[in-house]
Length: 230
Image 1 (tube, helix red, strand yellow):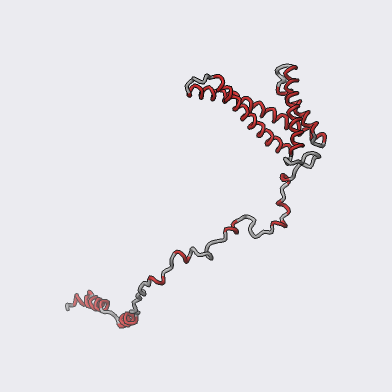
Image 2: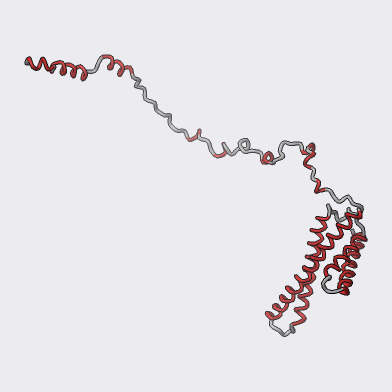
């Protein structure tokens, strides 16, 4: 080694390199002390696997009766569940075999029944009229066309007319009963006369009187039949 090399520090660098490259005794002890245990899973046993019945059993599924909003409540003690709309009419004569909760029931049921009844009667009348208009020797298509034309002309006309009269009749009848404080035959007859006259009010006095008399007679007949049969 030359003097220049000694001064430049080549020997010190080589010694430091050798020292760093050789492992220390402490590192060797740490490597020896590291755990060398390896984990190994147990083999799968098919007999211990869970099937569908394990989570679809009766204990896992909820009771359907508990899904009701009132489940677990004593319905006998819940006074606020009583609905006032279910109370029948308390006016004298308002309760009969055909119960009513007020003018809304009379308006809906009375108008609906009257409309459907008149529509059926008008359709039957139109069918008979259509069969009479065509001769027996006419082809079936021509007879069917005549019947359909008569049914669609007579049925809706009679149904719509009767439905309008029924709406006005129920409204007037309920109004009279409200102010008089009772429901009786006089209310029905008076409401029938007024509704019939209003229906033909644009045709003149004579048609008004005829229409009012017919509807008043029908209302009186319905009142008598209701008292007799129901």
